[in-house]
Amino acid sequence: MITFSLQSGSNGNAIYVEAEGVRLLFDAGLSGRMAERRMAGFGRDIREVDALILSHDHTDHVRCAGIWQRRFGLPLHATAGTWCAAAPWQGRVEDVRPFRSGDRLEFGPVTVHTLPTPHDGAEGVAFVVEAGDRRLGIFTDLGHAFPDLARWLECVDAAYLESNYDPEMLAHGPYTPALQARIRGGHGPLSNDEAAALVQACRRKPRWIALAHLSAENNSPQVALRTNRATVGRDFPFHLAGRDGPSDLLEL
Figure (cartoon, rainbow, N blue to C red):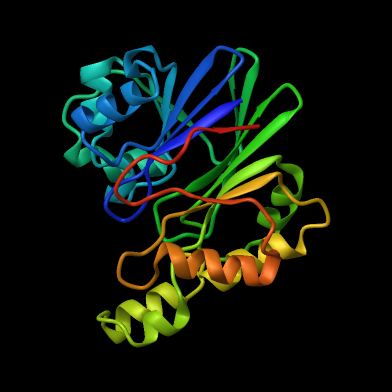
Protein backbone atom coordinates (compact mmCIF):
# COMPACT_ATOMS: atom_id res chain seq x y z
CA MET A 1 0.00 0.00 0.00
CA ILE A 2 1.23 3.48 -0.87
CA THR A 3 -0.22 6.85 0.05
CA PHE A 4 0.42 10.56 -0.01
CA SER A 5 -1.41 13.70 1.01
CA LEU A 6 -2.02 16.20 -1.77
CA GLN A 7 -2.63 18.86 0.90
CA SER A 8 -3.81 18.95 4.49
CA GLY A 9 -5.21 21.90 6.42
CA SER A 10 -8.05 24.40 6.55
CA ASN A 11 -6.96 25.64 3.11
CA GLY A 12 -7.81 22.29 1.52
CA ASN A 13 -7.55 18.53 2.02
CA ALA A 14 -7.09 15.44 -0.14
CA ILE A 15 -5.36 12.09 0.52
CA TYR A 16 -4.49 9.44 -2.06
CA VAL A 17 -4.29 5.72 -1.25
CA GLU A 18 -3.30 2.93 -3.65
CA ALA A 19 -3.40 -0.79 -2.87
CA GLU A 20 -3.86 -4.00 -4.84
CA GLY A 21 -4.38 -2.00 -8.03
CA VAL A 22 -7.18 0.09 -6.48
CA ARG A 23 -6.77 3.88 -6.45
CA LEU A 24 -8.77 6.01 -4.01
CA LEU A 25 -8.98 9.70 -3.16
CA PHE A 26 -10.34 10.94 0.15
CA ASP A 27 -11.78 14.48 0.07
CA ALA A 28 -11.60 17.18 -2.56
CA GLY A 29 -10.63 20.47 -0.97
CA LEU A 30 -8.32 21.84 -3.67
CA SER A 31 -8.80 22.79 -7.29
CA GLY A 32 -8.99 20.21 -10.02
CA ARG A 33 -5.96 21.72 -11.75
CA MET A 34 -3.90 21.59 -8.56
CA ALA A 35 -5.01 18.04 -7.73
CA GLU A 36 -4.18 16.83 -11.24
CA ARG A 37 -0.74 18.43 -11.12
CA ARG A 38 0.12 17.06 -7.69
CA MET A 39 -1.03 13.57 -8.64
CA ALA A 40 1.10 13.73 -11.78
CA GLY A 41 4.10 14.64 -9.62
CA PHE A 42 3.88 11.12 -8.20
CA GLY A 43 3.32 9.55 -11.62
CA ARG A 44 -0.43 9.10 -11.07
CA ASP A 45 -3.29 10.12 -13.36
CA ILE A 46 -6.27 11.42 -11.39
CA ARG A 47 -8.59 10.14 -14.14
CA GLU A 48 -7.61 6.58 -13.22
CA VAL A 49 -8.85 6.93 -9.62
CA ASP A 50 -11.59 4.42 -8.80
CA ALA A 51 -13.49 6.49 -6.23
CA LEU A 52 -13.62 9.86 -4.49
CA ILE A 53 -14.79 9.41 -0.89
CA LEU A 54 -15.87 12.39 1.24
CA SER A 55 -15.39 12.58 5.00
CA HIS A 56 -17.77 15.45 5.82
CA ASP A 57 -19.30 18.62 4.43
CA HIS A 58 -16.82 21.34 5.51
CA THR A 59 -15.62 23.30 2.52
CA ASP A 60 -11.93 22.51 3.04
CA HIS A 61 -12.82 18.87 2.34
CA VAL A 62 -15.57 19.08 -0.30
CA ARG A 63 -15.06 22.45 -2.01
CA CYS A 64 -14.22 20.95 -5.42
CA ALA A 65 -15.95 17.55 -5.25
CA GLY A 66 -18.42 18.41 -8.01
CA ILE A 67 -15.66 19.77 -10.22
CA TRP A 68 -13.56 16.63 -9.74
CA GLN A 69 -16.54 14.41 -10.54
CA ARG A 70 -17.36 16.26 -13.76
CA ARG A 71 -13.81 16.91 -14.93
CA PHE A 72 -12.28 13.53 -14.12
CA GLY A 73 -15.32 11.22 -14.09
CA LEU A 74 -14.79 10.04 -10.52
CA PRO A 75 -17.58 8.13 -8.74
CA LEU A 76 -18.36 10.15 -5.63
CA HIS A 77 -19.12 8.40 -2.32
CA ALA A 78 -20.59 10.27 0.67
CA THR A 79 -23.06 9.83 3.49
CA ALA A 80 -26.51 11.24 2.82
CA GLY A 81 -26.02 13.91 5.48
CA THR A 82 -22.68 15.01 4.06
CA TRP A 83 -23.94 15.22 0.50
CA CYS A 84 -27.19 16.96 1.45
CA ALA A 85 -25.16 19.68 3.21
CA ALA A 86 -22.52 19.95 0.45
CA ALA A 87 -24.66 19.58 -2.68
CA PRO A 88 -26.02 23.15 -2.96
CA TRP A 89 -22.68 24.57 -4.14
CA GLN A 90 -21.42 21.56 -6.15
CA GLY A 91 -23.25 22.12 -9.42
CA ARG A 92 -24.42 19.19 -11.53
CA VAL A 93 -23.10 15.86 -10.24
CA GLU A 94 -24.13 12.68 -12.03
CA ASP A 95 -22.54 9.86 -10.03
CA VAL A 96 -23.13 10.04 -6.26
CA ARG A 97 -23.08 6.76 -4.34
CA PRO A 98 -24.41 7.17 -0.79
CA PHE A 99 -23.28 5.12 2.17
CA ARG A 100 -24.17 5.07 5.84
CA SER A 101 -21.75 5.99 8.56
CA GLY A 102 -20.33 2.71 9.85
CA ASP A 103 -20.63 0.94 6.49
CA ARG A 104 -17.80 -0.98 4.83
CA LEU A 105 -17.15 0.11 1.25
CA GLU A 106 -15.77 -2.58 -1.04
CA PHE A 107 -13.51 -1.81 -3.99
CA GLY A 108 -12.39 -5.20 -5.25
CA PRO A 109 -9.73 -6.46 -2.81
CA VAL A 110 -9.77 -3.19 -0.83
CA THR A 111 -12.19 -2.44 2.02
CA VAL A 112 -12.79 1.03 3.42
CA HIS A 113 -14.21 1.04 6.94
CA THR A 114 -16.16 4.21 7.76
CA LEU A 115 -16.14 5.37 11.39
CA PRO A 116 -18.65 7.89 12.74
CA THR A 117 -16.99 10.90 14.35
CA PRO A 118 -18.28 13.53 16.83
CA HIS A 119 -16.89 16.38 14.71
CA ASP A 120 -19.27 19.25 14.02
CA GLY A 121 -19.76 18.41 10.36
CA ALA A 122 -22.88 16.81 8.92
CA GLU A 123 -22.66 13.05 9.48
CA GLY A 124 -18.87 12.99 9.27
CA VAL A 125 -16.68 9.91 9.15
CA ALA A 126 -13.07 8.85 9.48
CA PHE A 127 -11.64 5.93 7.51
CA VAL A 128 -9.59 2.76 7.75
CA VAL A 129 -8.39 1.40 4.41
CA GLU A 130 -7.72 -2.35 4.51
CA ALA A 131 -5.93 -4.37 1.83
CA GLY A 132 -4.61 -7.83 2.57
CA ASP A 133 -2.84 -7.65 5.92
CA ARG A 134 -2.32 -3.86 5.81
CA ARG A 135 -4.49 -1.15 7.34
CA LEU A 136 -4.16 2.61 6.97
CA GLY A 137 -6.10 5.05 9.15
CA ILE A 138 -7.28 8.47 7.96
CA PHE A 139 -8.17 10.18 11.22
CA THR A 140 -8.81 13.91 10.85
CA ASP A 141 -11.61 16.32 11.85
CA LEU A 142 -12.44 14.08 14.77
CA GLY A 143 -14.18 16.18 17.43
CA HIS A 144 -12.47 14.42 20.32
CA ALA A 145 -10.66 11.17 21.04
CA PHE A 146 -13.76 8.97 21.03
CA PRO A 147 -13.37 5.34 22.27
CA ASP A 148 -13.50 3.69 18.84
CA LEU A 149 -10.66 5.93 17.67
CA ALA A 150 -8.24 4.53 20.24
CA ARG A 151 -9.28 0.98 19.35
CA TRP A 152 -8.79 1.52 15.64
CA LEU A 153 -5.47 3.30 16.11
CA GLU A 154 -4.14 0.15 17.74
CA CYS A 155 -5.34 -1.90 14.76
CA VAL A 156 -3.78 0.08 11.91
CA ASP A 157 -0.27 -0.22 10.53
CA ALA A 158 0.01 3.53 9.88
CA ALA A 159 -2.20 6.58 10.04
CA TYR A 160 -2.81 10.18 9.15
CA LEU A 161 -3.70 11.70 12.52
CA GLU A 162 -5.05 15.16 13.20
CA SER A 163 -2.68 17.30 15.29
CA ASN A 164 -4.35 20.63 14.74
CA TYR A 165 -3.35 23.11 17.42
CA ASP A 166 -1.11 24.01 20.32
CA PRO A 167 -3.23 25.14 23.33
CA GLU A 168 -0.87 27.99 24.26
CA MET A 169 -0.72 29.31 20.71
CA LEU A 170 -4.51 29.12 20.50
CA ALA A 171 -4.98 30.98 23.79
CA HIS A 172 -2.66 33.82 22.73
CA GLY A 173 -3.51 33.87 19.03
CA PRO A 174 -5.88 35.93 16.87
CA TYR A 175 -9.02 33.81 17.23
CA THR A 176 -12.10 35.18 19.00
CA PRO A 177 -13.11 33.64 22.35
CA ALA A 178 -16.07 31.96 20.66
CA LEU A 179 -13.90 30.33 18.01
CA GLN A 180 -11.36 29.27 20.62
CA ALA A 181 -14.15 27.65 22.63
CA ARG A 182 -15.35 25.79 19.53
CA ILE A 183 -11.85 24.46 18.85
CA ARG A 184 -11.27 23.39 22.46
CA GLY A 185 -14.74 21.84 22.73
CA GLY A 186 -15.71 18.27 22.09
CA HIS A 187 -16.65 18.74 18.43
CA GLY A 188 -13.63 20.57 17.03
CA PRO A 189 -10.15 19.29 16.14
CA LEU A 190 -7.57 17.41 18.22
CA SER A 191 -4.65 19.30 19.76
CA ASN A 192 -1.02 18.22 19.54
CA ASP A 193 -1.24 16.97 23.12
CA GLU A 194 -4.35 14.89 22.40
CA ALA A 195 -2.80 13.34 19.30
CA ALA A 196 0.38 12.48 21.19
CA ALA A 197 -1.55 10.94 24.08
CA LEU A 198 -3.50 8.73 21.67
CA VAL A 199 -0.35 7.36 20.06
CA GLN A 200 1.45 6.93 23.37
CA ALA A 201 -1.47 4.93 24.82
CA CYS A 202 -1.41 2.38 21.97
CA ARG A 203 -0.33 -1.03 23.18
CA ARG A 204 0.50 -1.84 19.55
CA LYS A 205 1.79 1.31 17.92
CA PRO A 206 1.52 2.01 14.19
CA ARG A 207 4.65 1.83 12.05
CA TRP A 208 4.38 5.55 11.39
CA ILE A 209 2.08 8.51 11.92
CA ALA A 210 1.63 11.42 9.51
CA LEU A 211 0.55 14.46 11.52
CA ALA A 212 -2.23 16.16 9.58
CA HIS A 213 -4.54 19.18 9.45
CA LEU A 214 -2.12 21.51 11.27
CA SER A 215 -3.48 25.00 11.95
CA ALA A 216 -1.66 27.89 10.30
CA GLU A 217 -2.43 30.29 13.16
CA ASN A 218 -2.29 28.02 16.21
CA ASN A 219 0.40 25.49 15.35
CA SER A 220 3.54 24.92 13.31
CA PRO A 221 5.23 21.80 11.95
CA GLN A 222 8.05 22.27 14.44
CA VAL A 223 5.72 22.60 17.44
CA ALA A 224 3.58 19.63 16.35
CA LEU A 225 6.61 17.38 15.90
CA ARG A 226 8.24 18.52 19.12
CA THR A 227 5.10 17.93 21.20
CA ASN A 228 4.39 14.50 19.73
CA ARG A 229 8.00 13.35 19.99
CA ALA A 230 8.26 14.56 23.59
CA THR A 231 5.38 12.27 24.54
CA VAL A 232 5.80 9.29 22.22
CA GLY A 233 9.59 9.24 21.83
CA ARG A 234 12.16 11.00 19.70
CA ASP A 235 12.77 7.90 17.58
CA PHE A 236 9.14 7.26 16.65
CA PRO A 237 8.65 7.82 12.89
CA PHE A 238 6.43 10.89 12.57
CA HIS A 239 5.80 12.45 9.16
CA LEU A 240 3.99 15.65 8.17
CA ALA A 241 1.07 16.16 5.81
CA GLY A 242 1.76 19.73 4.75
CA ARG A 243 -0.64 22.64 4.37
CA ASP A 244 0.86 24.03 1.18
CA GLY A 245 1.96 21.03 -0.80
CA PRO A 246 2.05 17.24 -1.01
CA SER A 247 3.59 15.00 1.59
CA ASP A 248 6.28 12.46 0.88
CA LEU A 249 5.16 9.21 -0.71
CA LEU A 250 4.63 6.83 2.22
CA GLU A 251 4.50 3.04 2.18
CA LEU A 252 3.25 0.31 4.47
